[in-house]
Length: 88
Image (tube, rainbow, N blue to C red; front, side, top):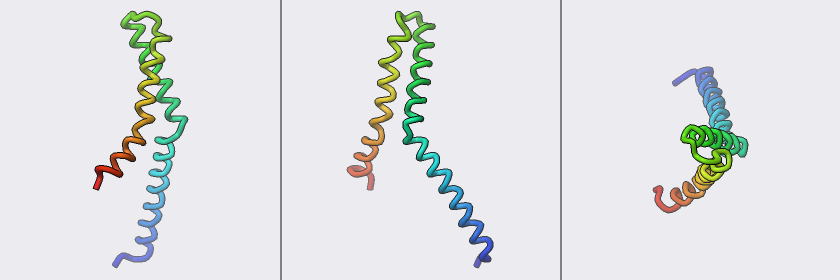
């Protein structure tokens, strides 16, 4: 049987891991992350549209950027449905 000190260390390691996991989960579900994804997606699409010489890249990049973010917002809903209906 492991000594008490080893068990205490393991418990502390688990607590630290749980803090990291909770922080990661908070970031994944935060509006800050969603806004960052939206802005970065928009910038990448503007750059691509500019290089492709498509008309009005700043205006035309809005729709695909919003569509991408909207698709990421629906994922939690789909995940919940899938877990309830299909995951055993």
